[in-house]
Amino acid sequence: MTEATEILALNRFDPASANHLAPEIEALVARRAATFGASSVLVYEEPIDMVRAEGVFMFDSAGRRYLDVYNNVPSVGHCHPRVVAAIAEQAAKLNTNTRYLYEIVHRYAERLLATFPAGLSNVVFTCTGSESNDLALRLAKSFSGGDGFIVTATAYHGNTAAVTDVSPSSFKSRIVPPHVRAIPAPDLYSEPVTDPGAHFAANVRSAIADLEKSGHRLAGLLVDSIFSSDGVHADPPGFLKPAVEAVHEAGGVFISDEVQPGFGRSGMMWGFERHGIVPDIVTLGKPMGNGFPMGGVVTRPDILTRFCEETAYFNTFGGNPVAAAAGLAVLDVIAEEGLIANAAHTGDYLRRGLREMSNRYPAIGDVRGAGLFTGLEFSLPESRAPDAATAKYAINALKDRGVLIGAAGAYANTLKIRPPLCFSRENADTFLDAMDVVLAAH
Image (cartoon, rainbow, N blue to C red; front, side):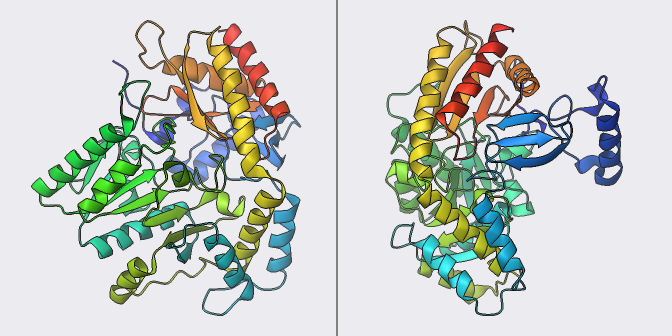
């Protein structure tokens, strides 16, 4: 039976099985191990010494160029000149804690909130997606009066103590704490159902009942709106709505984790928009500053007011002026370069190419996604059982051909294709050609 894989083990470099590393790489790995200790996480069978990046490409110390189809941190492109200039200009003027009035921070807050439905009119800035989700859990508990949370079975939402509790993929055992229930992701490839919305909502209702039976009142449902760590499950649009209704009927709140699908990634500004729903709380992170560490929580005033009546909350660096400058530049680039439309059109083009390829390579079991967020699942043709071996082979073989990619899903058998939003059809063709060569050689 295929075993589940915890998230940090997906495509992780294993020094115990490393063979014939180049001397300079071996020396860097040794330095890393000596300073980072057991917390060191590197990827690929032979780690890469990266030195610079630009647009959709990264470059190693030997000058080799790699097409990046995996890294969603530089959402508008690695080292985008507009973002770099904004950060440098503000850093040369002022950057300190957030206890003062800064026009640029207020301007950014207004611009950001204008992209959300009208009821979501307050934002709390943080420094990371983990911080954002941690605060979201606190807001949900304060507003609902409950402490129970529902997440999906292979979800990852961050790495604070509280957020790790609601990130089943962080546990090798997949056993979550007593106040958490993990339900199956809406995986139509492994579990075809006629009504995905009703099926997912039924699982949510069962989890609510089980929480209550064990003395835990529902606080909220927390999902990444494209279910990225579960293996990327985007369709059909609208299937989340019945589950959100079930949560509200039980007195809980719906938290949409937009750290990965947000800022245009899904072909819409926010992933939850594809489902025709308005979350109670939205969490933001990685793509927000195109590499500058920043995050945020967007919510309704009544939810935030309730929390602040009970708790004195302050974040020293959340919403600092340099972060605001980076965030404004990202919003400008997304709008001016038409990156949301590009994500929609180029993503559709890429998935069409991969589906055509699946006709020639039976190991490709499923191709799914939205915008520039695609899951390519490898499975055994005769049984649909997860094929992690082919995924691992493809990841390392693509790297050898100058393409960077990683894995997702419970069994590490799904390639997570998530390039910068400036990814073009030409870039897609480069990726498709490399994948064709790699699979033909397998």
